[in-house]
Image 1 (tube, rainbow, N blue to C red):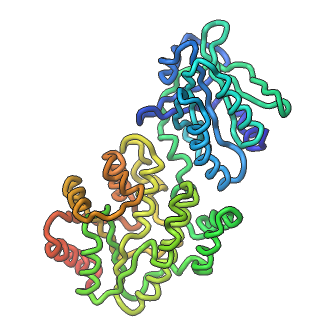
Image 2 (cartoon, rainbow, N blue to C red):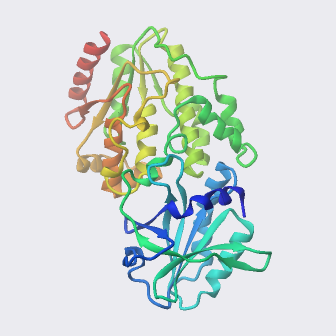
Image 3 (cartoon, one colour):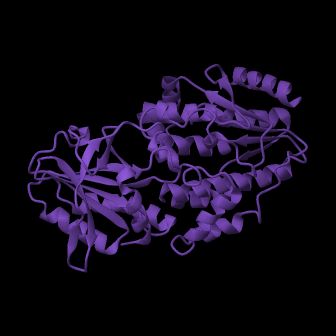
Length: 419
């Protein structure tokens, strides 16, 4: 059994398990003695002939683990019987950072466990997964059994732990691993991920060649730096171009143009790699800002706020209340990243934004499509924008005409930046 898997076992009975069903998290835990608790809700509709399993990805290096987790879902959906349901799940130590491990929960309704168990046996012999079965014991109570392989042919199951309901944790479990997994807070931490990718993602080397040798100086340039943030179709492009012309400013964007040929490749990667790529884009933009800001004011179309807000909203499942609380370190500005003089967040009524998107008729990224179809995701992105500090966003309603929005933003710039 892999070393990381072995390290989990001494704490196994203190871990909490979470299964995502229909957009809601269902929690359960395990204990050595049964005290009369009812079966957890996630098992309430399981029939006697059904079989349930959990797979947790817990071995290998972090990049390999992230890629394997993403590929495992495709394998399960492809190779399991069609009667087998696959749901995201995780295991964690409540309120303990970096304790979250991700995986999948399987409910096999096929009436025969043989095909599923053959696949699971093959997985634990070759891959960094920890497999459990959920079976009723002699007393009729549900038990969790941990699998291990004694040799290349034989799988053994541990003694059973009773499965019992668990209260939701104080903090949503996905928030435990956000730092330097979904959101990066230093140039070096984001670089380290791409360095680890070199052998399996050749394009990572191309990104490294575009980077500054170290994080650009954090000191502000001679002229003000104004960042314009907001969801797609809120008028960022129109506003940034107008500000460039009226202020005689340089217009930059994040991610920078030099990364555009690589975006499609990294958008296919798991969050760990994809987020590190976009984080490093901010440092390339910061170097450009430092150079141009010595000559003219600088307008930046999106910056770290966008990188962090989308990452946080994607990582945290469920409603807005699951986000890290206001003031959390998750919302702090990276200590080695240039700070803008002013950050404007354009907001727009959701229906008006959708209308503008339809009129544009442009292709959209997966996250932009999610904004259109998932109101909860949009609300989480907007709230994450508002909670980021150092600097915080100044909100501007983008529903009036482009000229009126420009005038309002110009007043804010004069008051804050004295331009």
